[in-house]
Length: 213
Image 1 (tube, helix red, strand yellow):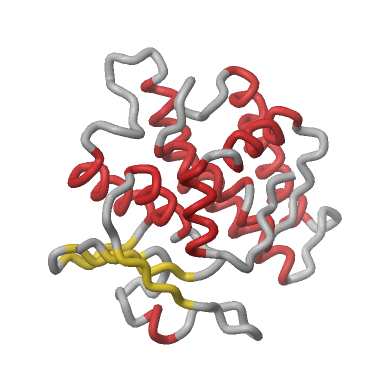
Image 2 (image 1 turned 30 degrees about the vertical axis):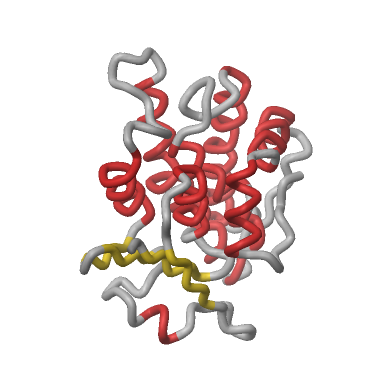
């Protein structure tokens, strides 16, 4: 059986959500962050040489990286769901946002977290660079959600499963105010209303306040 190793308040929520959307059988193993350092416990780091979340096991395969895990699960269990066909006009947008999540927003968020930890505010050249880069990225997100209800078009896809993490849980580490972004706020309410998303967060992070406003 597919086993999802979920580190609380982390990117591995994506995989729990994906499994719930697909309604496939899986075993969920939960790991708590260290209450002081907020880092993963040694048992989680030992699951894969990368030492990062998420990690899955399936028929002897141990796999890390959100994007790789999503591709693997879709290929084995997806049956064409939660994706966009190459013939669909939204296919390029689907591909862009699916990869933008990890390649651009992932880097931006990590830089913002590190800059904050180092006390580098917008008055510092590096802090200003980080904030400008993030501001441009989130302006693109707001614009896209004014064009379509979901990142891949009219329906929820794995592009949303990749992107939504940056609009919600990441804000526990790198706060961001979306009060001036009505399209993002409306999108977050659509995500929050999803039954599979609700089940995933209840199973994986029941004690976490969801940052949906």
